[in-house]
Length: 396
Ligand code: CTP
Image 1 (cartoon, rainbow, N blue to C red):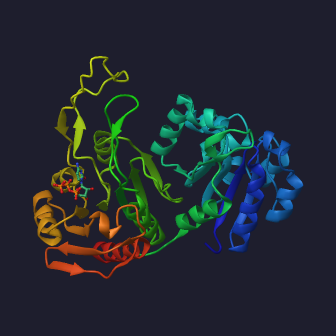
Image 2 (image 1 turned 60 degrees about the vertical axis):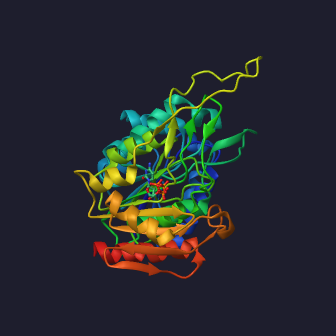
C-alpha cells in the first residue's frame, strides 16, 4: 500500500485514541494520511497530536474558509484512495446510512466517490440496538466495508460486541483493500460456519463446525486481492478483517443472503449447513409437561445452497463445494460433486478421530472433472492458501 492516500475520519468515541496508532502504522507502510476530526473527536484526541503523527493538516470545520480556498470539501472527499472512519460511532453510522451532511465528516462521506471503510466502536447495547443494526445493513448494502467490532471488555464496564477491532486488524483490512494480487477485481462468495435451526427461542439444532476452514479461505482469497463476501453462520472463529461479513443463523437465511449477493465470479461453500430444520419451531419456550410426555420434533429438508448456486441462472464461472464424510470419502464426494453440479469438491474425512472438525489441520482431496488430487495433511491456513491459488489460476 506504499504511496496510497487515506482520508482518515476520526469520530468522537473513547476508541479515538487508537486512531493515532492507526495513523502511525499506516505511515510506516508508506501511506499518506489526511486526518479529519469531528467536533466531538477533539474531546478525545487533540488536533495537535493528530497533525504531528500524520505530518499533515487536520481538517475539522465545514465552514473553515481557508480550507475551502485551499481545497473544497468535494475535492477533499475525493483526494484519497480510501476513506476510513476510525472509530465509527453509532451517531456517524446513522448519519451515513441516512445521507445526512451537517458537519465536515458527514459531508465528506456523502460527497465521496472513493471506497469507504468503517471500524465501529460503541457500547454493546448501542451496537445491538435495532436502529444501529438497520443502519449497518444499509451501509453494507451501500458497499461500505465494515471492520469489526469485536467482543471484549469495554471502557463503559460492559462486555460484548461493540469494542473497536484491534489496530493491527484495522491496518490489515486497509492493506487487504489495496492488495493487488491475481484476484484483484474478482468477487468471491464464501459460506462458512454451522447454521442454527431453532426448536424454540432458546434451543436449536447445530453441528460441530467451528468456521475455521471457511474463515481461513476468506483470508487467503482476500490476500490475493479478491473482494470477499463472507456469509457466516454462528461460528466459533471470528470473521476476518478486510472482507464483507453477512452474519446469518439458519440455512434459509444463508440461502437468501447468498442469492442477494449473486452474481459473483466464484463461490466457495465451506459452511456446514444443517440438512434439516424443525417444522413449526415454537415461538415460546417448550415447557416440560408435568405428565412426563416427551416432545416430538418433525423435520423438513433445508434448501441445498451449493446445488442452488451451481444449478441457478446466475451461476458463477467457478463453484467449489466441500464434502464432509466419515466413510468412503472419495466415492461419496465424487457422487456429491455430480449431484450438486459444482466444479470442484474439497473432500475431507470428518470422523471424530481425525480431529478435523474444530481442529486447526486438514487433510483434503480436491475432486474436479479430471479426477481426484490428494493433498498432504497441513494447517487449515495452508489448505486455504493452496485452494485460493488454485481458484486464482482457474479464474485467470
Ligand atoms: N451444502 C449446502 N447446503 C446444504 C447442505 C450442504 O450448501 N443444505 C454444501 C456444503 O456447504 C458443502 C456441500 O454442500 O459445500 C456438501 O455438504 P455436506 O454436509 O458434505 O453434504 P450434504 O449435502 O449435507 O450431504 P450428506 O449429509 O448426505 O453427506
